[in-house]
Length: 386
Image (cartoon, rainbow, N blue to C red; front, side, top):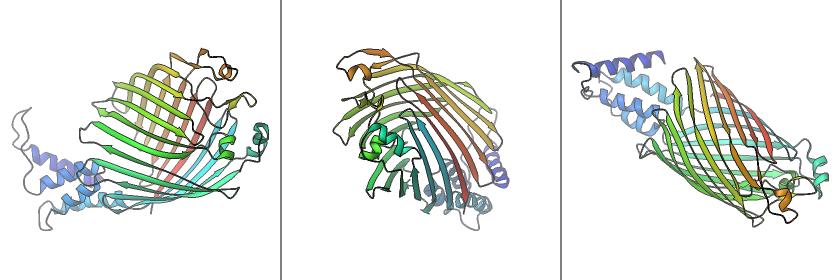
């Protein structure tokens, strides 16, 4: 890596020779060096297909061949298979405890195509007791399955196309399938155009597990990704549940740079709205069953995003707190009374990752607090080169 960085400096220095006084525009890189410079830019964008094609244009007898070889080593490392292990713990106010594990590999069979293969497992240690409180038959306490994921990134197209397929077999013997598809265009960089569709099995209440409730969702977004430190997004999504319920969500946010450097800080504002056609609040259980249903919820408030880089250690944190938020009270609506109540909203995220020379370990934590629903979600992840 140090040699590659030194070579990059040499390349840039060569481009600046005879550039003239300060402020002069550097001349284009001569000969095969221009392929090296562009390949380095494409590799930084993870456009592996374009980087590979550019490096192939550098002849073996070229003066730039040595630097092309250094960059090729970086490309080969990026395309190499990686082992991924993840353990996650989820707790919410339903109440629900969920433990999950994933183990698998990801690799690039071609420079423009990534493949992911994972075995997945879910375990609900308190499922039987809580299911009795909600009524009905015993909830399956575990599930096992597998996931296949594809990422297609054609060379120079500034386009990502991804798809996943997930199958689970539950303790009751039933097999359930879900999946997703997404596309992201970067043609107007730093503007991003995104569209996605997915079919998810809802896992956040025991009633949903027992009934195997699914949601189909489709949406789109317009985002600005790190434009001189600025960022933001506008997104909308429609949701259709397997029990004929429907939902809509929309949100927008923007942040501006406050601090730059090893410690970076961004601050801004966000707003969101969410609604579901029918409430799924249970008076008997005093919880959402079989799944969470916001009713005319609206909020807005400040957002803070911070990151700290200390060599190979990186720490990220963000917070989103509503200064004003309200929604239709599901407890009153269950009695046929419509009333709007003010509600708290807090969303906190934190994470840390450590680069161990090819291997990487990371931990994350996510907490969300709404009027009648809260959850904690923590995970630890390990990636190893193969």
